[in-house]
Length: 457
Ligand SMILES: *Cc1c(COP(=O)(O)O)cnc(C)c1O
Image 1 (cartoon, rainbow, N blue to C red):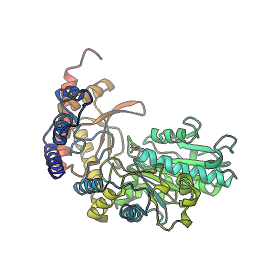
Image 2 (image 1 turned 90 degrees about the vertical axis):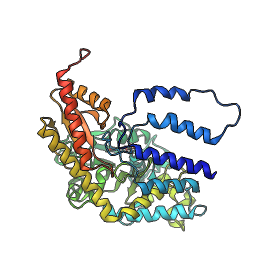
Image 3 (image 1 turned 30 degrees about the horizontal axis):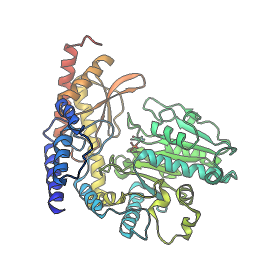
Image 4 (image 1 turned 180 degrees about the horizontal axis):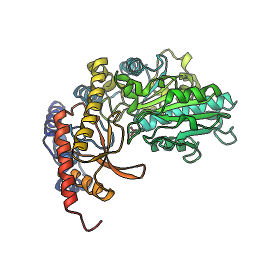
């Protein structure tokens, strides 16, 4: 096995070293060459080294440089070196990290990471946590706990008896709810459309004063870190308004929750610890490899009741924290390892610096682009920047030109009716020089797009 793993490590190192210099989007020729994978299933065993070579030679060039310093699309972090290294070692362990007994190391490391995370993010120290694949599943887990708790209080055992005939559960969301929360509501039988929508302000924040009166079992889905603007709902005020009437407040903080770890950004999420559940990602701002998301639930029994496989597993009877008692999966990888590795290596100050740095870089992007004549559509309070270049058509063509030019990558969005480019700064490796170089390229592409309107529209 040795030469094969050494070869993989060497190829991975070469790949990572190439990222700062190569075009961020894969070259069209590299994408076209993917047809090289279209071979018949081999009838006979082959050489492992040959398989690895093929993977690298065909696969690596057709990747986007998402792990590199100038990918600003969606909200995507790069893997910190230590988190990637820990991922490799944990991959070699190949543990089925469902239960403590057979995999004590994975379970212990996850429990420590959970303790550090609640501390770092200012959440209740005894909140239960689920280490899952991303914020989508984290939202699902937290809302499953909410469903359990609210219906239990209404005298209904939802896990046992399902939703047919259950007391109705009201779901209140902001008009800017992330589609992954909507999807989670659908998976939970609460309905993607069966929601009460609360209006939002110009930044996408829920208007707390517009919340309806709470009657009966109700969950209120809030958000910190709007995927376009980075804006945060006034969670503390929402909690004050709805919790006295018994509502469960959930916070989707896929990336915004990390504001709590950075002193200058913390006021944006002040008081969000009053909520009942929180979802976030680790593969976004903590910069660990895909896939890693986290759910935290104040009432751990509710989360375990929703997720544990049998009643015998239930909390107080369990001697150890079994990771799978809080997750939809039973068999699962030791996902907590790279989160632990990132936190241990960065420390509190390192996480704060990462968040502060990316936010400062977002402000720098906005300043340089505005100075170049572009229009910034949002208050850049976190790591998201919304940019319009002249009109919608020019903006669209400018984004296409930026993606093709290759210095950096940013995507398109529509914000409150306006076509815009969305820049998300979330990578540990991004420098100010990367921001300046990227902003220059963006303005250059805008000038080119503005002087060469395409005929196709
Ligand atoms: C990214 C994001 C999600 C979904 O996260 P995944 O990790 O892709 O599942 C949910 N909510 C918000 C606000 C996000 O930014």
